[in-house]
Length: 155
Image (cartoon, rainbow, N blue to C red):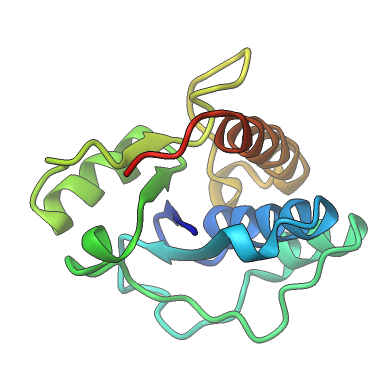
């Protein structure tokens, strides 16, 4: 089983969108037994808050629910608990390294790493473009799922 953790700043917009989009993609392909998926934020600022309503609305437009999700902060022990940590932007990646003590096992990656455009997923909290963030996250999740289901598992 692959254990994936999506990470953004507050865990109320991008990373929960990624968590629930990836879960929906996994279910659609019948791969639930092969993946465990969660999300966290690098900040404690929104700890315990639900998914931001505009982010939840974008998911709902795609038939994806996120009821019951509340923001959680990344902890150092999450590095060992997950096989893959996927950050939404460069600042998130830097914060992950700070919180976890680095990335000695090469588990930290970027959301858009395997897409044709690369780069960051812009934070819709600031841009107010939840539709664009959701589109980018869907593209990122699709590319990650394709990569993870076609590559050889590592021991």
